[in-house]
Length: 63
Image (cartoon, rainbow, N blue to C red):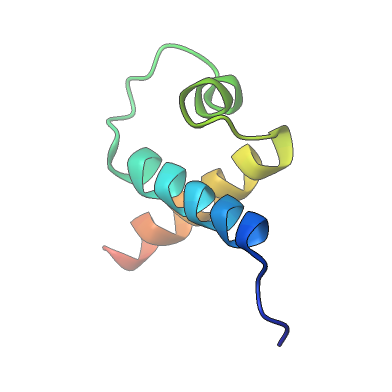
């Protein structure tokens, strides 16, 4: 596996941070999640979708 360069590692860290936040956020968010994650964490659309997927895995593991 190749080493992550600083920008790649930084993006991974922010996606993980967004995923952890979304995993513990109550479900009563009143706006679409992708735009919310993009605004709150500065993610690209693809990164926001990755964070949502990661959040689902986090929630599944906590059951």
